[in-house]
Length: 471
Image 1 (cartoon, rainbow, N blue to C red):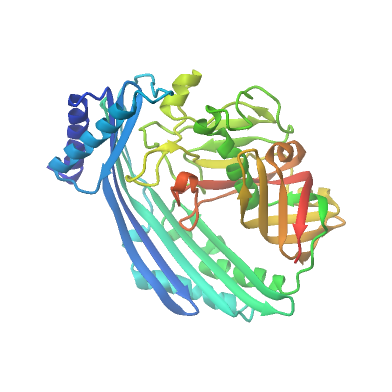
Image 2: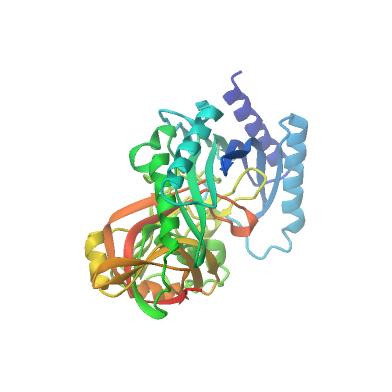
């Protein structure tokens, strides 16, 4: 029996055993994920680690109530114990469950998808990865007198298996590789930080030319040097050009989470009961999908549902939500493939895939020129969001726009507002788009961090957004 046949046999036995214990439906999945991290700080390798997350997670349903349990132990006795726990949890909580997890039964899915790359990170030795980091860090030093330099490599790869009571058998191979460079320098205005990196579902062959360590390191040093002479931004409501990374974060953090069905079905989201309403400008289209160039490769979710392209907002009109199987049944729509977990130790919940602003008709140059006098906000270094749609994001890199041209770098910009107002203010989306995923970062909903997602899309122009910062 091959290793693949062995895993499928274990999962089928888990499903059969769970049903024999009274479960009305069982889902069993197996994750075998490798996480590889290398940190080169100030020319010293401070971390070179490889971890493995390997085990089985079992979802058992009893009268519409789910119970979840997991085990890293692949012995059949322990798998049976895991099934027992899942079924007992479902049975013991079903009388208190006010929201039944019923869903339409489907035909079994049989699929095997292997993501082929030229140079898989699992086949690239540590010395070669460290060499990439050294090359990038060397280019940082060519741009700025850095107080501190950091080069990071991160990779996650492996196998995912899924079996359920319908007889589905699904296998696919996740992959994320990322290079990230960070530069810190000191100047008369205080500390300056610059960073650049790229994460993709590709092999090591991706990191040449546009995304070579030399390019990324040079950019990190350049952006750091700019911050040494940065000026305070104009405060108050400003017209702004929003770069792809910051726009992608807004699409994910401020809008996307409000569309996830566990939030909307309980009425907590301001988007609850808003399907069909015009919420944004005609230039605002937001999409979530599973397989997208530059994003995270996600052909299936952790309920065995094929991921699909979901248009959440179409030229300002709100079209729908991101579902698991139960919420899709309740709302009378098809599942969207958005039930995900970080790994086998966590219960899958509604999560995003690759979420982005769709392209428009303007070039990037035309978009910047249209701002005339305002700001250019490229990237974010974090922020805060809330369930009412309010957001505050700190901008890692920004510039002043004067007379339609980018001029001075800006210091410590923050953008704040409410996403429901923001999407009304979008007046331009560019033809140029870019997506990004990553090992360092990701979605952290309900403590499941970091779940790989993709963000990005078009550059945007917004007529008005509140600008703060400068200190």
